[in-house]
Every structure is written in structure tokens, then in C-alpha cells.
Image (cartoon, rainbow, N blue to C red; front, side, top):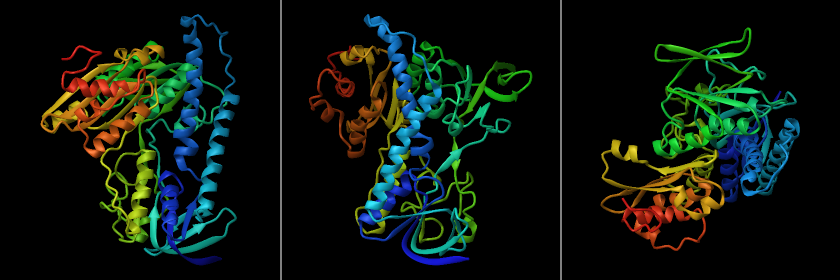
Length: 467
């Protein structure tokens, strides 16, 4: 037996796009109901960004203890309790989940636990955990169901030997030898964690560089640093199979040459795909593209005008902060408030050094036929980097040759996730290199990388030899 309800706004999914959009719409005076089948916070908070970054922080502690010997500080070899470590990670996640639940309640957003499916373009049925069903209709329906790991044929996750990113966050013991398939952000972050916790790590990647799509020099700097920690890379190779007997072995080919690497665990990190299974979108007249993403226009409208899609379920960058921005932009657009048009969406990878990028890089500028100036500032030019024991990395700035406007910035540096915010402001607001160079940056800080890069555009940098 089902109960019928009518609400103002119905949001399906309480991940970064869904819960942020729901809160903002509620702040603007509408009654909002969010349907979530698991826990609020979505993949990012529960099984992605937050738990992985917690483990990366712990892994950095291990690395710092090892490096301290060079400073004359000697620690005993760290003893790692993997279950205790993962327990700490879970407590961090739980605290943030409770925080999101509190924010939703405080803003008057109702959360309904259950799995949603469309009955038609106006009605959604929610199957609740207790077996009851609730039929809902709304003036506006927002799909924010996110994404899930892509499965590589022959490497289906089994929770024990073959893992996806979710499985890697639920380990009870650390594999001694780990093969990571995919050198994107997820693969490299887990490679960093596993290596620093004591596993041997081999990374296999189809493309010829780490972080495909990022600047090649930034990628090379990261590779050098990770190889220095003992991570082994095979780039430009195609994974061809998995042998389970007599032991776990991953086969891969480079041209006509096939090789194999032994493993105790395999992490598959070859991308993500939209999570729409079970929604029955066809009943609502909602179309998807050839890759399964929900097609939307510039106002997030699907092929059914009162149904919208935001976050990872639609085409675009699959990033939590982009999803949050989608949620806010849609909520304010529906309320007739500001039309938020963001062009500068930064990407961050939490390796060591951290990698971050915003706008276009040098190769993209060349492919678009743009006349640009490009500056390069090595990490070693900044005093703060050396006080942190880091010298591998750089900052690149891409500037329009005629207007001097900053078109993009790429970083491999400690704290790149923070530094990229200044670069994002510059790209979004159309600031010039000269304007950035006219602002005093504190010394000694990593922010001087951006200052020197801006000054180098005009051959005025002091702490590097200008090209």
C-alpha cells in the first residue's frame, strides 16, 4: 500500500549536488524533500573524497616520520594497525554525515529514506526500508544520484582480491603487493596510500602519462616524486587479463609484448559512470546520451522540462565541488535569483606533491590556436617549499598574449589544493598576470609560486632566471 504526497521540490539523491541544492532551495523559501537510499553526503563523503583524504593524511604521517631522520629526528619504525586506521577514517566520515544531517534538519529539508523510481513524468515512487511505499509528485524534480565506479570486464570487484574504490575503503588487512589499474586521480591517491602504508605498488595506465588530460610537465613532476617513493609505473599499456591460479597475476601488453605482474590485491580505478539504474527514466521521458549521462541544457533541464539533473549524473567534470556548484546554481535559477555561470572549475589530486589545475593548459591552448605566453616556476625557487623538504614540482601559468588575462594555471606543489583557489579567481574574473603580480604575497609561503609565475610572464620574476 502506498501513500501519495505533493511537495514543492523533490530531490533524488543526497550527495554533494543533492544536499547542497536542497539546502539552498529551502533557504530561498521552498518546501524540499530529499530521497536518499543510503547515507546523506553521497559517494564523496561516505566512500570517496573524505575517507580517501583521511587515509592520505595518515599515510603522510608515515612519510613524515621517515623523512624526519634527515632533520636529525629519529622515530622507531611505525607500527600500522590497519583496522584501527580504517576505524579512525570511519569516525571522521560519521561525524561529517551527522553534520550534513543536522544542516538539512536546520534548514527544514525533509529526508526520506528509500529508493526512488519514476512512475511517469510527474510521479515518483519511493520504496522505503520498512517495505512501505510513498508516491510523491512535485513542481520540480531534481535528479542528483551521482556516479559509480566503472567495471573493467574480467576484473569485476569481489571485495577480496579485486577492488574498486569503495572496496579499497573497507579492507581488514593491507595487501603486500598492489596493482592499480588506472593512473587518474583515484588510482594515484590510493597508490600513494598503499605505498606509504608499506605495500609494493605497480600502476598500469593505458595512456602515455599520469593524470591524462593534465599538463604533461606537471604529470612528469608527480611521476618523478612517486617513483622516488618506490611506486612502479607502466604507461601506454593495455591490461589484457587476470589470472587467479596459482597466484594472482595481472597481464598487460605494450604493443606486441605481453608481460605480467604478481599481486595480492588489484584496485581497478578506470573511471566512473552515471548512477541511474532503477530510476526508470524512460517512464518520465528523460533521455540519456550515448555514455548513459542524463542530457541537460544550460539550465540543467532534462528532456522533460520540469525535471532537472545535476552533479555526476549529467555530462561534465565528475567533481564534488562542481556538483555543489550545480546544486546552488539550479536552486537560485529556479528561484529567479542570480544566474550563476562558472567557467573556472579547479581539479585537485591529493598526491605528494599535490596536483591542481584550472582553466586551460599549454597543450590545450595550442590545440585551440590561441596566442599565449607561458611561465614556468620550479618549486625549488620558493623558500617555503624547501622548509617543507620538497623540491619536486612546479607552477605553470598560461596567459592570453594580447590581453594578459590568465587563462589557466597548473601546479604540482605542497598545498596545491589551496593555491589553486587564487588561480580560479583569476580565471573566473578575467584577472591579468600584471594584476596578480601587483599583489603582495606573504613570505615565506607557497603562494609565492603564483606571484613569481605572474611576474615571469613579463620577464620580471626575481627568484628565477627569466626566459
